[in-house]
Image (cartoon, rainbow, N blue to C red; front, side, top):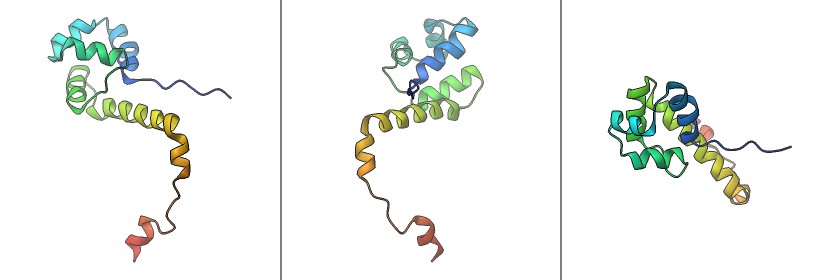
Length: 104
């Protein structure tokens, strides 16, 4: 079974927002007061979406900052799983979980 490709938030920005809405990276940068280099790096998958960027995108596109930060978190978690799977497999779960600690 093949693994699905991990999609960077910059690809979502491009494919789901900029292209359909006919917005250029330059226009997005100007309208959101984000440096054009930051927009370009996000679109290339070279830069993360920060809380500041998420706030600006959500104000501009009419969605929530959580949408943008959620995309970034999902991407980051998948990257960690792929890049460090062996490390996480070696970690043993504690017998007593927080649920049992909080019950007592």
